Amino acid sequence: MLIPWIMAPRRNGHCWYWPLTISVFLASVFQGVHSQMVLVNETVSGYVGEDVMLHCNFVNSPPSVKITQVTWQKSTNGSKQNVAIYNPAMGVSILSPYKERVSFLNPSFRDGTIMLTQLQLEDEGSYICEFATFPTGNRESQLNLTVLAKPVNHMEGTSNQLIAVPGSTKKVAVATCISANGKPPSSLNWETKLKGEPEYQEIKNENGTVTVISRYLLVPNREAHQQPLTCVINYQTERYTQTTLLSVQYEPHVTIEGFDGNWYVRRPEVKLTCTADANPPPSLYEWRMANGSLPDNAIVNNNTLHFRGEVTYGFSGTYICEAKNAIGSRTGQVEVNVTDKPLPQGLSGSFLGIIGGVVAALLLIIAAVSAFVVCRKKQKQRSDTDSDMADLPPSHKPAPPPKKKPEIKTPLTAHDIQVVHLDPVKAEEEIITLPIQTTYYDMSASDKSPYCDPRSSGHMDLDVQYADLDTSALASPPGTGSAIHASRDLVEYATIQPHLR
Image (cartoon, rainbow, N blue to C red; front, side, top):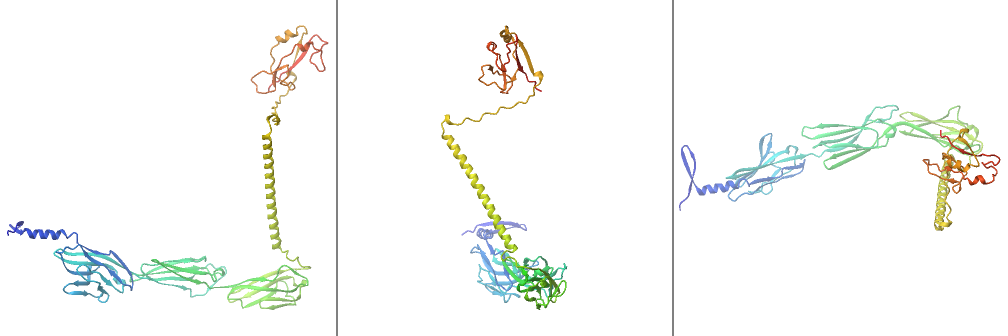
């Protein structure tokens, strides 16, 4: 059989001839090179002391490719350090310092997965899984291993005794919250109702861990005593809390109880009690009066002042109690007044105030209800009236109220009165020839008067009319108040002409 040959490129003036079958074989091999790959997890993380698995698989390898070795390496500052090697002929080899902590899970030509136990901070870095193949060469992939360190969390109280100093504004650390040797560092905060402020500090350790410290600063005072203070530490998905109760020492705050404002003559069995809020508790109580000494029948029993017998006017006065502890002393006082007769029982000021408030509320409610009832009654009456009117026939409905004519206040003077003399014989002719007079204000003539003829003009006033004289009136006998006089030859009448100013 003839074997086809192909000519290779010239080298040193000569041509190399390769069999075609060898060329086809090499082409098929190099065609599969691009599909071959090493699969790994790009990132892997674990905590110090735990175990992690580093996966590595060789995929898409053609049957013609032969795997000769699997090697794990750690890349440090650009250099590679062998960790573990699997060779089908030589077996498994683990190098220091991983000799006791690294193992292949199922070494084969396709699987190079290893287990790394007892993680250490020094194990963090980049790892390379490499497959040596023939004739395609080496194939490798790289993964990053992150080593986490869980912090050690705790809270500490102050070693110094907290003492409230009156008037002081100096802040001191009352508690400290610590998250030590964490990687990555924790976040710290405080939960409390105290009016203080935190301060923070971070310390970077040589092994890459971080210690976070937070101190809570506060001016010690009486209100802070026995108040809870909680430290909150957040690391990754974990949350750590610890609470402490502050202990603040302060001088006594004194009040006197027992006087109810109703000490009257001959009242039996009264006493005064001195109550002191202090830390530590008061070790001594002293009683005295502002002016003079205690009554003869007053007996001091620690923080209580007993009065023997019945109340007298001698019990009146200002009583003072002084309480002392290791921090200091404070006083309290009460003014006692003795009356002739007891106050009415159950009618104290607070009780009377409550009764007054209730009465005022009832009065307001009654007034509101009354106003509502009256309003509703008026609305109902109005509604009934409108309904009755709607039922009446048109002839029974009341006429609408007359429209009020506007009043024109125009003062009249003597110049507004015009006197005209008429001849009785020629009265009719003269009346006809008289020019039409200007408007005048007829306050008595109605619309039905036969002598009044309303005429249109440019004025809108309804009281302005034109007057025509009826000649038949000249023949009638004059009446009382008539403008025509029979005893004279001339008839007089007057027109009133307003002068608009």
